[in-house]
Length: 593
Figure 1: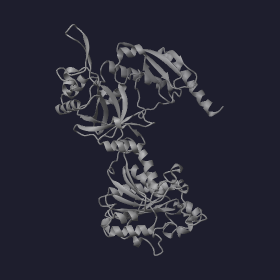
Figure 2 (figure 1 turned 180 degrees about the horizontal axis):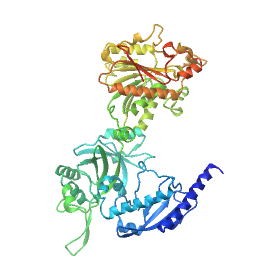
Figure 3 (figure 1 turned 30 degrees about the vertical axis):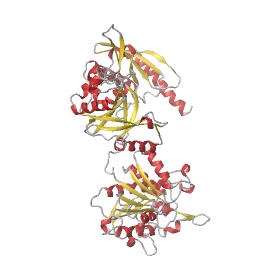
Figure 4 (figure 1 turned 90 degrees about the vertical axis):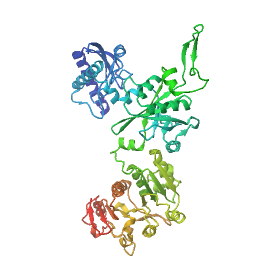
């Protein structure tokens, strides 16, 4: 019997035992059973008395129980008699456990059933007795989304005052969301273009952003009157909304945020074209009112619309996903944002440079300048960030396209030529960047740039990067402009670097038949390991106010070099595999990582 059927047999046996347990202990009734493979093969009904109410629960056992929790819903009549309650959604499902914080104990399936039922009873009891109403606020997004008519994205920066922002409509095949809110129209357009979406320019609109100073209370607003009540304690916000509704035609969207500690919750309400059915005092005729009483047709006045003429007009609700880079890095990272706002230029977009560009964005640096005169070829792609579909295009272009689709908030400029040609045309072109990284492994260019820095034509730090054959070692030289350091002292007369790991490293380069076909052999996994360590060094240097010029020697798999009889320089014969040595150039003090 293969493993697949073995696993199904295990699940089916435990499921049968669990059904019998629920019948015996809770007098459960099987209401649906499907032995075919699907998500919930069996559903049982359980009758309970909760806070004086006769409740019927529907317990669904997942196909992989007890490796997953059961799902509990209210039977329709029970739901209708109790809804709304905290942790109960419109699909009648109870939210019992946070999957991040809790996981079932598969060795105790009956215990999982008992604790799930007890948890459901506790939630329902607290809700019926109104003991957990604060949890509506704590889980605001969950309840707001239940009434949502659509989903949008936002890169709006939160503020303490109201402001006009932009709503940009767009289409992208993979996204449910079809619109983006942004502080600037240009930022929104750039974001959509980076993603590869299609803009719907006829639907660009100015909208209002209101930062709410207090959380929304349940029941959440559903009408003009509710919005008026929500804002009446904040006269400035109410006046701003009134002015906005007076100025712009319906529908009129309002983006709002709620701050809780350092986190933000977002949502949108929308005021639609007002109308209401009225009965005329003359002959009792029914009519539809769409205009403000006593005003010329088409006149708008926000305050009168909200509080006087159309208070019961329902608002539309929309859900928002905050896709600001700071929020995403906090949500999907360690929350460090010290590199946000920095700019880095990278000369050389080959294997080393392309992965460096990726690493810079990974540590929060979203504004890059990529410089390289070469086009991507097939022999590049095994260790390059980009692949076969990009062959034939300039390397800066393909790296930019790859990164901006991953990080739509990024700003990446390109220059498809040599860095020296850029500086010949515009000598101070790189001085607006916080760091200049040179990943071209070309000593004459590195020396020329060092000279320009020494003579104060380049005023920012320069980091030279390169790797040795088989990635026996990788190197970095950080030169800070204030140190007035010449890198010539770090190289021997024959051009060999003083910290070279392989003795006579050029002997290990390879060559195919033809002119200019030499190449340095190394694998992409070792390269990524080198890049990761270098990124840690770069991050530390960028945030060190007392930083000094340094050299970094990254030692690869030295054991493997010895195994293949590749000679090491004497100073590295006793070194440890995959270690890092950092020297202050000024006094040659070494640290070992």
